[in-house]
Image (cartoon, rainbow, N blue to C red):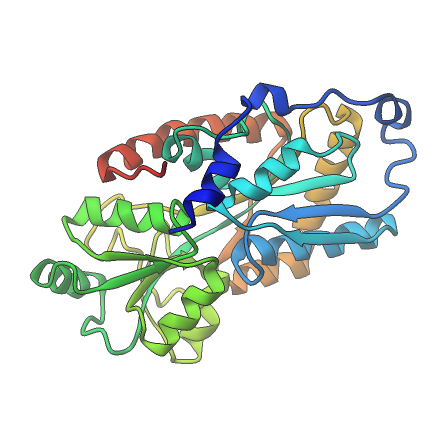
Length: 332
């Protein structure tokens, strides 16, 4: 679990409404006509190597190619993505600081934390959805389970014996695995890490036994034979990994816990800049090479207008609030 000091610094203090700075005269005057005229900072609220970071770098490269301005990916992990999200919310609303948002930071955190220094709906302009990354349940080869049904049986007979790793308390992987335990009546021990990459490293070495996380972080290891995939948390099999059954078809009917990712900007960022960013997101996600890269890693493009993205966040927030309540997860 992250330190109490870290969470207090991020989660206590001013209300979210006070964080949404009004656009300055410079931002209003420039608009999108001359934007961007300098490098853009793309804040990723998680450590390098995870699905959020991988997607950010793909998009950053496409933006650079389109506009001739560099995009600097800045990783700001901490408190389930709240540290980086606060940084995005507090940045100047001029289009030169944007950020990656995902299911955890935009829809799960409001139910986990008693007080957030940002509001997923009010503190940001919602640029648009990027992609959906399907969680895959993987285990270390030492685990005596070759499929989801065998895992459920083993976990029920051995409560607390299996350790599952995640990228941190309250992360999307944490909530997805908690939802699985609620649905199956199993009990496993949560081991939070400071990011997905160190969790995967310990899974590979056998220090933990299980993870349910985005395909980009684990599918290469499944293909290399160093991890065993039991099921995907999607409602249909992945085209790039059709041999892996869904968790729903393997014994947990209706189970779905995919992650989704989108771009946000500080509230007050001019609408024409948001429109320009959204248009380029659509171009980037329609690129054949990007689509092939995402498909190979168990993901698929999933674009939305800013309004559709905002509505999706609202809907998902209500959905995951129920899961968090049933799992009795709370981070003070």
